[in-house]
Every structure is written in C-alpha cells, then in structure tokens.
Amino acid sequence: MSDLKTAALEYHANPRPGKLSVELTKATATARDLSLAYSPGVAEPVREIARDPELAYKYTGKGNLVAVISDGTAILGLGNLGPLASKPVMEGKGVLFKRFAGIDVFDIEVDSESPQAFIDTVKRISITFGGINLEDIKAPECFEIERALIEQCDIPVFHDDQHGTAIVTAAGMINALEIAGKTLPEAKIVCLGAGAAAISCMKLLVSMGARIENIFMVDRTGVIHSGRDDLNQYKAVFAHATEKRTLADALAGADVFVGLSGPNLLSAEGLLSMAANPIVFACSNPDPEISPELAHATRSDVIMATGRSDYPNQVNNVLGFPFIFRGALDVRAKRINEEMKVAAANALRELAKLPVPQDVCDAYGGAPLEFGREYIIPKPMDKRLITLISDAVAKAAIETGVATLPYPKNYPLKSVDDVFNG
Ligand SMILES: O=C([O-])CC(=O)C(=O)O
Ligand SMILES: [Mg+2]
Image 1 (spheres, protein in one colour):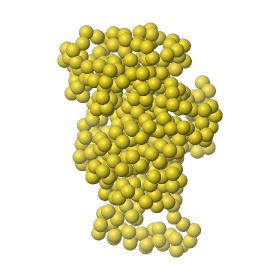
Image 2 (cartoon, rainbow, N blue to C red; image 1 turned 30 degrees about the horizontal axis):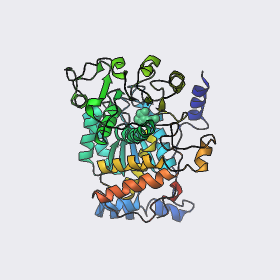
Image 3 (tube, rainbow, N blue to C red; image 1 turned 90 degrees about the horizontal axis):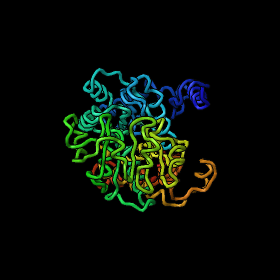
Image 4 (cartoon, protein in one colour; image 1 turned 90 degrees about the vertical axis):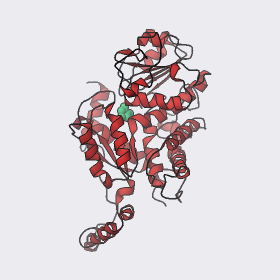
C-alpha cells in the first residue's frame, strides 16, 4: 500500500472510527441540570416553539446546524459509488464546517431510488436545520434537485459542487489571468467535464465577463458544439458553432484549461499545445487531470492549481462553503443568492493579494507566501477567510433583502473562536 493510503485508512479507523462526534454545550453534572435539559424542563421550549416556530433558533441548535446531504451519485471525481461510500466525504465536510466556521453538521446519506424521492426526503427533514449543503450529486439531476429544494425550503439550500466550486474557481481564475497578463473576456477556455461543477463554474465565469464563444466545454463525446443533438438543456447553453471536435482540437492555442472530470485526462502534448503562460486548473479529486509534477516538467510557464491540500494553489470548495454558510446563518438568510456568491468570490480574490501572516506560512511549511504563480488563492488555514468572506456574504444578504436579522454584533469575526461571542 502507498504511504498515503495506509495513513488515510489509519486516520479514519483509529483511535475511534470516523472523524467527528457530537458534543454537549450545557452543564449535565447534577439532577437539576438533567431536569432542565430533559424531562420536565425540556417541555418549556417545546411549548414555546409550538407557539412560535422562530423560537427554535433560540432554544435549539437549529441555527448553527447544517445538513450535509448526498445520494453518493458523484463522489468527488470517483463517480457513482452509492450513498454509504460517500459517508467519509460527508463527514469530512462536517470536519471542515466545524474547524473553519464553527458550524455543526449532521451528515446524511440518502439511499433514494429517484431524484423525486431524494427531494421528498430532504424536504421532510429540512426543519431540523439552519441550512442544507447538497454534496456530490450527479448532473443533470442535481440541477432539478437543488431548484426544487430551494423553492420548497425556507432555509438556505446550496449545492456545494456547483456554487462552492464555481466561486473558488472564479476567484482563482481572475487572479491567475491577471498574473498571466490576460483578461477573462479575451481568454480561450477549455472546460473538461460537463457535470455539476463544470456547468456552474462556466456560468459564473460568463457572468463575470468570459465569453461563451471562447469557452469549449468537452464531455465524454467531445467538444460541445451547436451541431450536436444529444445535449441536455444545461450543456446546450455552451454549444456554439465551431470546427473543434476533440479535446486536442480545443486545447490548441487555449489560454485556460479547467478540469472537473477525472484523473490524467490532460496529456503533456495537450498542455504543450496551449498558449503562452497557460493556466491549468486540474480540479478532479483526488487525482487531478494532470499531475503538477508532469505539468511543471512539461512547461515552465504554466500556472497550475489542483483541488488538493498537498500542492500550491488549492482551488477547492473548502475555501467557500464554511464561510458562506457562516455569513448566511448569522443573518438568518432565507437563501444564498447570486449577490452573496459574487461577494464571496470577490472577497476571496482580494484576500489573496494581502500580505500573508506568518502563522499561515508556518502551517504550509514555513516558506513565505506572496501573490504570484504559486499563490493565486488564499490557504484554507487563513483565519482571515472567516473575517472577510462571512462578512461580505452577510452584508450582501442584508443589502439584497434576504437576511432576517441585522448585521451581527460580533462581526466581522476575528476567528472561528469568535463565533459565539455575540
Ligand atoms: O471534496 C472535495 O475535495 C471537493 C469536492 O467537493 C469534490 O471534489 O466533490
Ligand atoms: Mg463535492
């Protein structure tokens, strides 16, 4: 077994299975404590909530509790491996929500026979939570699932693989283009993959200035173009008239490669055919479309990012979902709208340009970090993420009228430890 495989299995198995547990937040030392926590005292908040449902936010953990929910149909870049196999990832999202944003998570794996069954299941349990993070659900079903749940639930519902990934990709992309001396409207972009993350990333790039006619989306059949009659409505948005048919055709002269597909699908030859200062976001997890080693050995002018924690430039939704939900929960936003997403992307992009504190450099091996080819996007360990992104999201929610609480007294948060110091 490889070192990483052994270490990862050991990490998950010992000293106790899994990687997070439920903790108590109130005293339970005496009979009196128990008579408050449980019968008879517990009847009092029951009556209050029955009278006024909003009081669930005052007397229960609802307002800081997010459901991370998957059907296991598109686990990372590994594919449809079923709901139970998705549990380590969903527990992992729980770890990140808690570690970076102080948010409690129940991970829920749903064994559903159809998208409608999944929607019905999630809808019925949604009252338990302050927000719902949908995860690793395959396209195109994920689009209808998210749409229906947003409509039916009065709490934020957010498909992380679409919007989390898109927000982080857009932030990193705009910074990488700036370093390469290029612009989004001019950039020729190849997107390998046409699933949830790919479609959502390209949509956000278009809304931030990229041109559809400069985007070549490539699915298993080849380049998506207007002559194809096998496209669903989501892919069809990216169809335009072009002679390009294969990934190799699309890559020739391209400025940007975004991979949201599977391992090792970008070859050295493909990379060599791209324009000067090519930008490669090989974001398939855990194995990127091209390894950073091969990319750097192939071209010295490449600006390279992956979704992984163990290389520079981690373009991964971990930079989005914890802080976006924090901001949304703290102003009790009814939904996460476009303005909140764009605010998050801009906050992320701007943070990469600020001087990096020593503790962040230390967490990543000690070498100085500075805006440039090897540092286009902040590091997940950066405490300023919660300060800046959650603040930007909360303000955008207030400005666009989806917040139901005023700007929080404890904002901007200094760190995750600040969350309950209201
Ligand atoms: O979990 C990750 O590292 C990022 C992600 O959402 C995915 O790949 O589906
Ligand atoms: Mg995911």
